[in-house]
Amino acid sequence: MQIKIVSRWDSDKILFEGEFETLANALVEAASKRADLQGADLQGAYLRGAYLQGADLRGVDLRGADLRGVDLQGADLRGADLQGADLQGADLRGVDLRGVDASNDTVVTTNGETLGQWKAEVLPALLAAAPHVISAKAWDCHSWDNCPMAEAFGIKATADAPPLLRGRVAEFVWLYDAGLLKSPVIGPGET
Image (cartoon, rainbow, N blue to C red; front, side, top):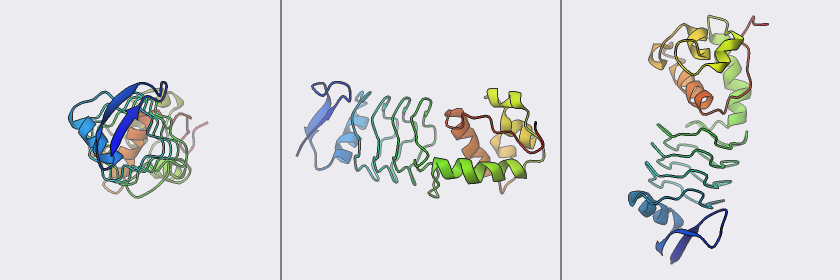
């Protein structure tokens, strides 16, 4: 079938088109050709298992899209709208999520936790497990010199975190650097 990927801002602007069996196949082809899909409207798209490594998806509307198992490694998702998108099992290593609009029901971890669950359940437990109090100024830092995880665990890299918490520390760093943990959460004993 003929598939056209259009701009979310101008439906007359075609970003990529061709004969494909599915939208996922069209996106895989677009990614392989390094097509610029910036601003594409993919709201509600079924993309499960697609290989979109390195795709330029800046500003793409992915609200409600099924992205389970999608390989997005190295993809640029700056400014993408991911409200309600299911990212369970998606490969997000190296994905740029700065400015992404993700709602609390967006699945963000490989074990199916939503952003809301992560903030409400995982983050408090992670901070409670930390041996050190996090200063308020650390929440403005994004380097290993004095960022929240550096202060909380006295570490200079994710690999230095306690083995049982290493994955959670890595998730924190990814979500924090992506701007998805915006509110300063104060550690135990902080005033």
